[in-house]
Structures are given as structure tokens and as C-alpha cells.
Image 1 (cartoon, rainbow, N blue to C red):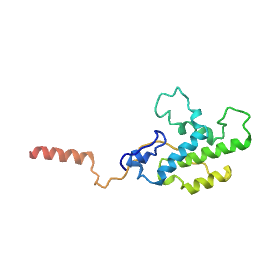
Image 2 (tube, helix red, strand yellow; image 1 turned 45 degrees about the vertical axis):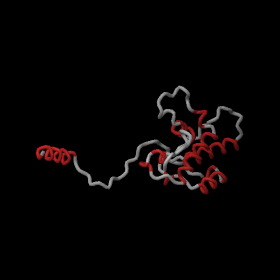
Image 3 (cartoon, rainbow, N blue to C red; image 1 turned 45 degrees about the horizontal axis):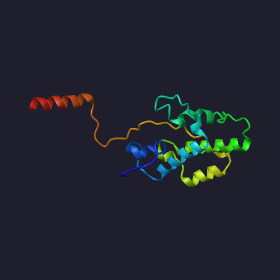
Image 4 (cartoon, one colour; image 1 turned 135 degrees about the horizontal axis):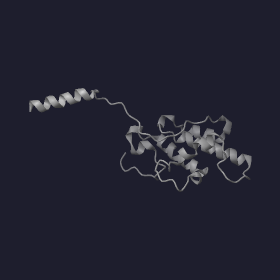
Length: 157
């Protein structure tokens, strides 16, 4: 994919690194999930004094609060239905931003989860940013074998 564009924070990991897999419709699911998290109020929870870029990955910072059902809104007057809708949005958002594209739901499933009850949505795994390793097709050599081949080549020259 040439000339990938998008808003920082909404771009799926596979768009900027092939280590995560190829770009597909699941990349749009990721972006949608980040938007849903922000709409649910996730950005408001991020502490402005966070200095590390990993501290600014807001899904990581709010996951525990949502999973243990801590209220994410300081307004105690929030009615139960609004609280349930907000929790549902967080759970769906977390499913959509799974690092592995294969773990993200299809958009039809996202719609189904948003229209259903919050109790029917399983708790998603905690989304994390990491660099996956892809299997290489080249044969693997030990550092001893590589070192010996370099020494052998140097002595021949």
C-alpha cells in the first residue's frame, strides 16, 4: 500500500508495519474501534502529565477500569442505561483494536454487539502494542555457525 494516510492513533498497526499482517478491511475495524473508544469518553481519562508515548496509548490506560466495571464518568448522575451503553462501547472498541487483525470482529459482528446487550459481549483481551515476530523463510544458523563462516571467508581472501 503506497501513500497510507490517516489520523495518528486511528491507524491500524498493520498499515505502518507488515509485521502485523497485511492491510485489509480489518484495518478499518481498528480505526472504527479507536473512534468508538474516544466517543465513549476514553480520551478524557488520559492523564495530561503522561510523558512516555506508551503512557499516551489511552486504551491501555483505561482497559482495567472498564473491565473491573469502575465508572469512567465522574458524573454520579449518569443514569444506568447511559452507563451500560458506555460500557458496551468500551468493550466493542477494545474488540476492534486488537493488535492481531484476525482477532478483530467483522463489522457485521460489531453492529450485532452494539445492538445487543452488554452482558452478551465477552470481555476482550487487553489490547497491547508490541512488535510481533514473523517466521523467516531463511534457514536459521547459530551465531557460532555465522561467526565460523565469516572467519573462513576472511582466511580465504
